[in-house]
Image (cartoon, rainbow, N blue to C red):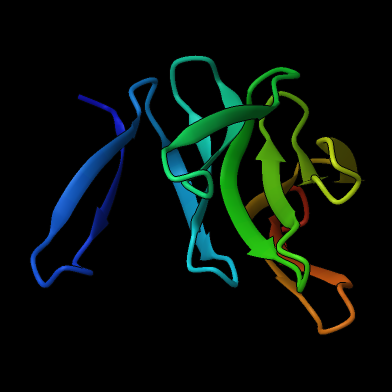
Length: 144
């Protein structure tokens, strides 16, 4: 049915929960220091980048970026303060984008807008919180 679901075998048997009935593609998942879940994903129904977490005890979803068709190929990472960092592809503009809630609210930045770049992203942070993003540059057929 296209729902975004989360599955865990923490109890010894697999249990599946619907997180967002608007759907979810290109998911990425991370755990914070307390073992709470954080998921970035593409909302199929609204064509947005979304974020879901169960940090409050129940699932809460947030639209992070809704400027066109955005949120493909998401990758999520948490820093040492459990702040969120997401890399993703903006299909409308063919750009690599980055979103974070470090300031307390969501901000988005275009990282690479040269031609069509940003597919298949993967983000990692070093111990000082600096970000590194690997991605595919379609225009030049390069891994960047």
